Amino acid sequence: MIHVLVADDHPLLRSGLRHVLAQEPDIAPPGEAEDSEQVLQLIEGKDWDVVVLDIAMPGRNGLETLQEIRKRKPTLPVLILSMHSEDQFAVRAIKAGASGYLTKNNAPGELVRAIRRVLSGKKYVSPALADALAHAVESGDVGSHESLSHREFHVMCRIASGRSVSEIAEELSLSVKTISTYRARALEKMNMRTNAELTRYAVSQNLIE
Image (cartoon, rainbow, N blue to C red; front, top):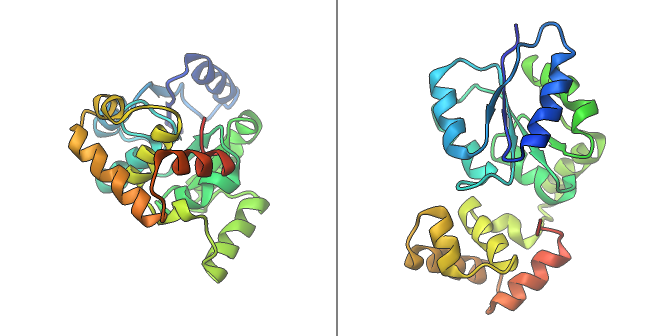
């Protein structure tokens, strides 16, 4: 049997994915996690065949959780699930070690195919994502946010969504000083000076959920 861990903070989405997987006779009832801490606890307690991971997790976001999974379970396939189109996050996710990238719009129909592909040792990428990856490799022409670390990127998106530094610090269980440092690094790398500039950029790139 194939053992899948589904990680998403929305119960309705987990229920829908569980229903899709239940149609497959060789896939066991999936495990479920609603935040990054549960994901990390569950991967230590059981040998999973694949993790389906939401990119917008409470606490650590999906990309940061992916990095931690790579440290603890280097060979465990991880499929990233996102409401964002492939051109916004997919290249970053694959470069961070994801085995594939699914948008929530096409996840039900593609999920089983994606799981079977990554279990065969291959990457799951759509034709559009394959083109984007090839372009990024060949030309190095990527968005300014691609230069940010995952934490800097996460802080930038939170600021652009209207959260204050203190709110982000509380959410991530970090100090205000640490979040301010990440903000300052993001501004410097992107050659910007203000939160308003970050917000305009994030809106233009469809990075805000």
